[in-house]
Image (cartoon, rainbow, N blue to C red):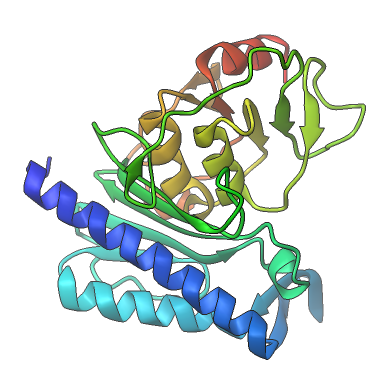
Length: 272
C-alpha cells in the first residue's frame, strides 16, 4: 500500500485532473464541440454512443500529465486504447466526459471522473460535476481512509428528516422501479455516484457499468460512509476489488448497488 504522503499526492492529482476535465467541458460547450458516433456492432453508427471532441482532448491531456508525474502508473480510459504500464500496481481509470449525450445537448448533468486503483482497490477518486449540492459545478474528491470532500472542504452529507421518500437512481426510472423511492435517471453513472456520496440520492443501481464509469465514484461513496455491493454468482456481496481471479480490472462489469448501508441492504433483499 502507498504511504500517506504518496496517497495525498495521488489524491491531489486526481482532483486536479477532474477539474481540468470540467474546465475543458465548459470551454467546449461555448464553442459547440464536434461530435461523432461510435461504430455499432451491426455496422454503421450507434446514435446511442456519441463522442465529443472534448472526450478525446481531455483524455489526451490527462494521459500526458500523468505520464509526467507518475510515469510508472497504468492508465485506462474510455476513449483511447493503449495501456502505458499494464504491470503496474497502480491504475488510473478515466472517463473524461461521463454523460456525453447530456453534454452535447447542453443538459447540465454530466461529469468528469478520475479513479485510482492500487491492486484493484479504489484508493482515490475525484468527480467533477456540472451540478452539485452547492447549486453549481465542482469536484467531489476523497482518498482511502479520509472523508468526502467538495472543492477542498470536508463535506458531511445532510438529509432533511422530514423527507419520507428519498430519491434513487434507477436505470428504469418508472413506476416499475423498486418501491420506496422516487426514481430518477440522470444519464451519468459518475454523477450518480457523487450524488449518492453527497446524500442527494439515497441509493442507485447500475446494470453493468464499465470500470471508468464508477472507479472514482466508489471511492467517494466509501469515503462518505456508504456501501457498495456487486452482484455475483452468490448474490449481492460487498465490493472489495476490481481484480477478479487474476483478470485485468478493465474487464470488470457487474451489476452494482451503491447508497447508504440501510438502503443498499433493503434494495438487495427486495430482489433488485
